[in-house]
Structure formats: structure tokens, C-alpha cells
Length: 353
Image (cartoon, rainbow, N blue to C red):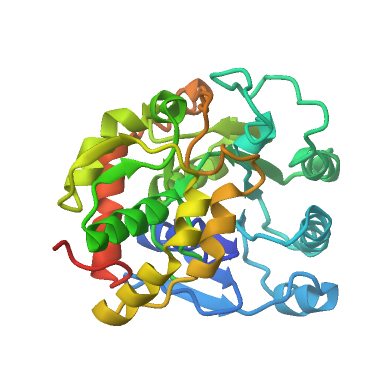
């Protein structure tokens, strides 16, 4: 593994930070592009931080042109617009194609590829499904990638998760963190853990992906010859219904589970912002970008649907990934409970009362 050198682009987010850790644990040397130094457990590995502005072509050339030993690139960066993201990717590829050992670039897309944010869609979604008219969330970017790679020695690989969950100091917003804040706030208020949405949302099928599991899958498809130039769906193994795991989530906060409350999560976090502000001071919690949380919950969806729940099924078929040799699974309930424990350890939420 020592001859494999990874470049992780966007190394402080919920996908990039765990990817750095998993690569280091597997013996890779890692170059990490991010504004801030990644807060990861290097475990004795070799991590080099590169604060490069990907919107600046000359900065990319200056920062990466001398890294002749990079073999695999993992693109986890976000951008405020699709146009900027495509520009950043194109400029990065301009330099990567000059590196003599560049072998693969891996991208994280998502279920918006199948139009999950537009309303009900065919489930389980399959990688072979036709593109959705009017849903160019990743299509132009993917077309550029395919065109750039055609006839070249290097390859690309793509994973399509939904609701990546984990803890990252650089970007802590995700479904598990939102549930953790909600449970902590309900505990502080002395209220039951009622489900924030409707009966349909409570019982619709939903899926999530643990960030560390996603990282290991990224490494697998990037280094497996049969996965060249191919996209793969991924989740923790099986979809779930919020109704099935809600009692366990409530118990994690010492609360009684209650059913659907028919309010929108975005509105809850707006209305009870003073509760969180008081809790942060009272318990000495780490700063959390709470002001972004209400809008984040809605994302590109139309209320009452959102990132936390939909009134239609949202899950994908992962047969292609399993057949490639990646068979790791994780119980969804256990993932949430593990992340709650980590958030308490990091003082993002209070200890259970």
C-alpha cells in the first residue's frame, strides 16, 4: 500500500475527514486539501495539509504540479453553485492529467441523481435508471468527467449515498446530528421525543450511510480494477422506517417515544433556537452552526418534505456494489447511537441526563 498516495479534496467535511482517517489507517500517505487543517486521528500515518484554493487555477498548478507521486484522488469538496463545482473539477483535472502516476478520481454524488428531492420516484433506485428530465444535479458534471477520461489511462469512480452521517468538526450538519440536537433539546424541555413529521414520513422507507463505511467503500471502488468508470449506490445495508427505530432513539435521550407531531423540522429548529442557545451556555457545548440548521433541513426539497424525512420512499438498490466485493453493512440504529455517543464525547450535545 505504500506506493499509493492519496489526495483528499475537501478534507474537513463529513465525508472527507473520515476518508483521511481510513486511508491513514490502511497505510496510505495522504495529501489533504482544505482551508483548515483536518482534525483526524492520523494513527501514525503521514498526512500533509495543502490549503489550496480550487477556484484558482494557478494555485492548483503551484500546489499540486510537484506532487508527482499522487495515485488516487478522492473529491469530497462542496461549492456554492454547480457552475463553480464544475470549474473546480475541470481545473483540478487539468493538473492531475500531468501527474505520471494518477490512476483514479473518486466522487461522492447522491440520490438527487435520481430526483429524490423533486418528489416520489422509482424505488429502489438503480444505477441503470434513466436520467430524470429537468434534474441536472450531477449530469453535466458527470458528462464532463466521462468526456475528459475517454481514451485516457486514468479512471473515475462514483458513489451515490443518501444522508451521510458522522461527526466532523469542519461540517457537523447531517441527519444524525440533527436528531441528536433535537433529542437533546426535547430532553432539556422535559418533553417526549415526538416525531417531527407526518404519519407518511414516519412510515416511509428511508436510507442513510455511515461516513466511515462510505470512506471504506470509496477506497474499495477506487482500487478495484472492475470498478473503473462506474457508479455505485451505497447505504448502510438496508433501508428503514423512522417508526421502527424511533423508540431506540428516544431511549438514548432518556425520553418517551411519541408519534408524528405534524410539524416541519425546519420550523421546530427556528422556533426553539433560544433553547439551544441557553443549552450551549449551560452545558459548555462546542460551537455548532445552529443558525444554518433550519435551512439545511429543507435543502433542495419542497416542504413538508426535507432532508430528515419524506412522505414517499427514498432508497436505492446496492446490488452492484455488493457484487464488486464490498459487502460491509451497519445496523442503522447502531449507527445513530454510535454517533450520539461521539457527539457527547466531543461536547457537541450534553451528556444524557
